[in-house]
Image 1 (tube, rainbow, N blue to C red):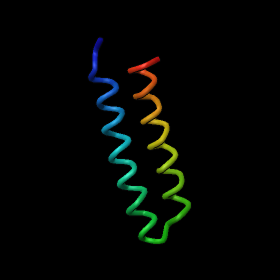
Image 2: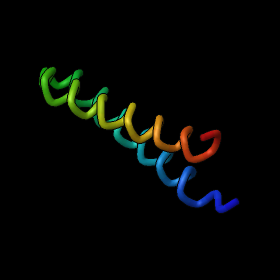
Image 3: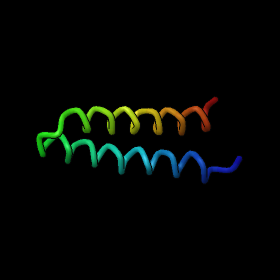
Image 4: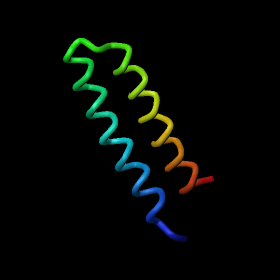
Length: 52
């Protein structure tokens, strides 16, 4: 199995989650929610590629 795809997706999820937390602290709640949803989708995609 090629692990590059899931690892990159989960790394992207971590980066996006950090961005969402930073946006939330800056008072941009709507952008933080959207970025958090993208992070959750990336993490879910990584899990799907590993276990699906």
